[in-house]
Length: 326
Image (cartoon, rainbow, N blue to C red; front, side, top):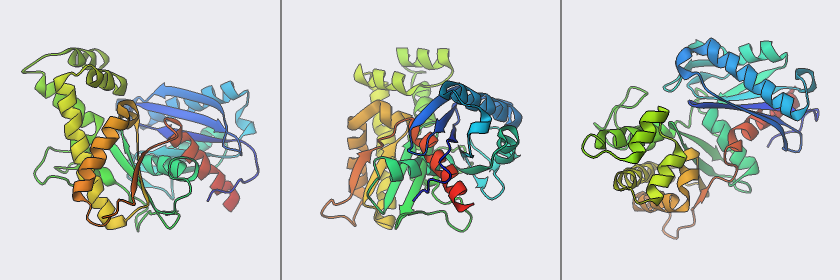
């Protein structure tokens, strides 16, 4: 569990493929100030770092604090990572390779900075403060631009020999399936992420155009809220692709449940939050077909509780643990 450290506020940063969020977080886990800016994902590491610093400054300004008032910071970043050095080795959703994001932010802020996988950090936030609270064994899946996961066993995050375990989005759910951003084929992410849903909708629109396609083309991406609205309005293409994505997410999660036997499966991310319980029920139904290790249905499927704050709060826990360890 996270220690409180010296009690001063810390900074938590959630680096995503489409947005960067930062929070100044007190020792009681209250967010004192927030910042949010679009991620310049195509512009490379230096541009991402610059925007990250600006986002942190936004959060500090809202909190009425300065850099000198915070004790440490942590970043939840897409990976794979070298967590010891704070380097992003590469990322399917960011145009970076071997970029020292941790040392860069540490130099800018003048405080120690810890880096962890973005989804693992968010999952840790849910484990300590959110939907996984009170459970020792948790499987968390976050559905957004990509799909990531956090695995908690006996109260500890499973990191593996390389510190990069938990990449559940790259479990293959269909051999020979569509190509994923990681370079492999048939990954869960290639079927169930928001990127995959958008690609399928655009492909289907060549036969039948609709208003959701117009929004994607106008905004340059699929927004989770627009997808949820299209489903609410019974758009047949949106409904079909959401059902398809939920099915494959369930296939992957069901297999993982058989291996890990968690007490609870937490499903979060922008897509899951926007689509709500009906989507979660579809994912669970698909997973249950795969699960052979839970005949009494003791394992619960629950929505994430922290929303967009999961990454920021999880990162703040990472930062505070770093202080406590000295």
